[in-house]
Length: 142
Image (cartoon, rainbow, N blue to C red; front, side, top):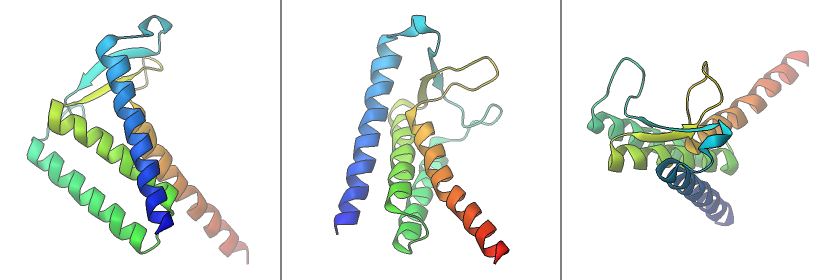
């Protein structure tokens, strides 16, 4: 039970950080002069195809369900699940209530604008994949 509480606390804390930073940096454009914060409103899932909101919601619910099943079957740890849950919910809330995702972190002209939810999703995937890669290398040596 304590692990489940840890998952929810981590996901909730990360989700709050995501939503607060989106509000703080996007709406008020604070720190834009530093050159790394350039608010953008991403209404597209990709650069060429716009997906209707109903499909976005279905995909998000499918992803959340897959995360829950994978966590229950112990395919990944509570930390990975917390990051994936927070990232998915962070962008889903924007898509449902704002019809797009608020992105504000800008690194350079050849790199996309992103937000903390995107970072959480990438961290969650990396935390899942990296141990699997090293486990495969260890099994292969033996």
